[in-house]
Image 1 (cartoon, rainbow, N blue to C red):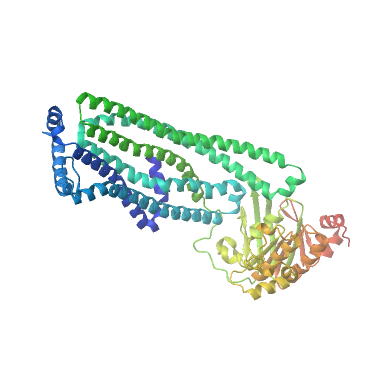
Image 2 (tube, rainbow, N blue to C red):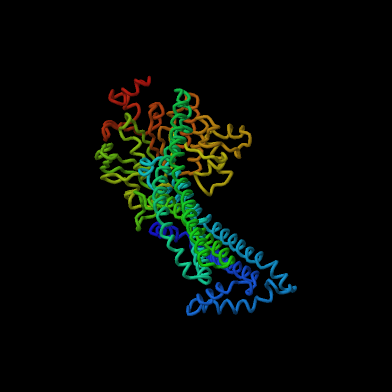
Length: 618
């Protein structure tokens, strides 16, 4: 029950918009459960009417009368049943009585009507609850995805892609399979148990209570195998995460895998993880499916005892048939609830993982009194910045001022803090000490959306989406027109190759822009920056992965984009920094050299040495 309460408490906020369908599903579930008792009562009534009273042995009639006499419950139930039969009697056939038109109609329709009521209520209940559960789980998926999109960069650095995909899809699917059928079982099956139990009590309450002795025995396998299913599901989810992560790694690194001939090794690893997944899945299936046969076997013990009791007491055949049917109808919903209990245990694993991801909070948040940013007027300052990734210092007491309109080149060996400087500027991280200021205001005091709108990023790692060319460019500014998109493409020297594509600007470029060359992808990224028309341009190794021809084309587009903007250009190829007003060299967390391009070459320092290594001389 604890797991069940936990699941319902978790989904409660998502259920509210669909309460109408859920109430309808619950109502039809109750109707379905109650119809089981009606079918049992109708069976007993019809069988009694097919055996005339005058053929019953006197001792049986006497025993039946003695059994009902003096028992308030049985007498009251018999009185209610007698009133109902007085109303329905003319419509029900009876042995020894000539058939009338009403009895023919009633005899033909009584069971079809009851079974039709039972079947339609089951269908409507299942449909309404499935309709609601699909939407509840979809809303949950969207909420999880939205929360993931809000989380800060450090969270994604420590998370695997396979794990995140599994949380969105796999964990939600576990919950969905529980809700879609589970809520219906939770409502219908207990009502069915109560209605059938009541019907059996009306026939013989003492015998019915004796049958309940077997009920606690059914609980033992339900609890035991529920725990085993939960444990196996946890291991299955872990194997599924590893398998998903392996697939993501393989698809994203296919060139390296093929270049080094790693296909067989990756396939072998995938097969190994698949075998683990199969083993844990079969453990879960075994735990879920074995409960039903165990409950059925226990119920058959009750049937055997019932037969012996009927023979011993010389009860009538109708009583035997009804009790036989009733015991089966009593333990069938118990069997269904047992299997659902296992599904609850499985779903609880997914719920815990979803709760964990929804409990994650962004490291970088707007303050409640964050100042709006409407423009860029003065400059950028890094004021005594220190920053470390865990225990690894990257920047130490760095001081840097970039007045508006300055074109700043940033140089340094790997790990010197170039990209960290950019990350701090975009506030992907906050400094451990010091402050990054925009127009004199600490970024932590400004609206994140506001100050990021003042910047455009063109990086070595171009991110394009499986959209059309025009849609990818327009991501730079959500309200831009088609004319602005085409103008940006012309400025980025991309219009010519775009118009040569099969559908021009409406050509879908595939995931990550795989149908385009590196230079073409980079020019689309520059076109996106043109559309954004931000006053601050950040170039992070924008031409590092290009060949000489593509680099020349992209550099021409960058030079045009840089006009009348404040530029921060991180570059490995120093030749791209000739147009910079000022260049800084980072090393060991600080600035060790700065100046103009020609000035730095003439100094004969670190920058000059790096330039000579690339064939650049004063």
